[in-house]
Length: 228
Image (cartoon, rainbow, N blue to C red):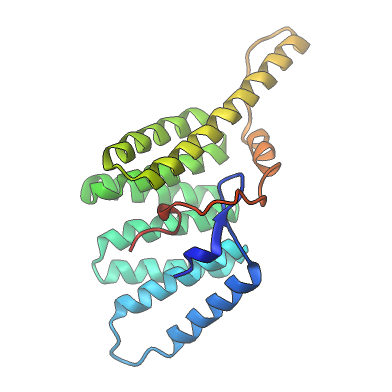
C-alpha cells in the first residue's frame, strides 16, 4: 500500500521517500478505515491499521504507530491469523525499537521468532532479520551476525534476490560496526595498556546515529513492511 513511499536510511531504518506524500497517503488510509461499513471483513480493518501504523512509524510518530500496530496485532490474534500475528508483531517490535523502547522490542521480536519457528517456518528468515537488526542496534554484534547469517542461508535457499540483498546489506553493516569496534578497542588498549574491552551499546548507537536519516536510495525489502 505504501511501498513506493518508503525507503531505508544508511542505518537500515525505514524513512519516507517524501514525507508530505506519505502523510497524505496515511490520511487516505485513515479515511478508508473510518468509512468501512458495518459487516466489512475484519481482516480489511487489520490490514489498513497495520499499514497506517507502519507509515506513522516511518514518519517518527512513535506513539500513534505503537497504538495502531497493537490494535492490528490484537485483531490478528482475535481472528486466529497466526501468520499476521508474527508479521505484525515484528512491525510492532520495530515501532518500539525506533522509539527507544528496547525491552519491549526485544520481547516482541523473541515472541515472533519463536512463533515463526514453531508454526510458520516460511517467516523465520523475516523474524531473524528484524531480530538481527535489533541486536545490532543494541550493541550485541555477535548475536546480530548469527541471526543475520541464519537468515541469509534461508533466503539463499528461497532464491529471492531482493531478500538476499537486504540481509547482505544488514550483515555488511554489522561487519562495519565490528571493524570499528575492534579499532576502538585496539586504540583503548594502546592507551591504557590493556587489550581487553567491549563496545557499549551507547557506542554502537553513536556509530549508527552518524548515518541515521540519510537515505540509501534503494527501497527496503519486503520484510521491513511485512507480508500479509
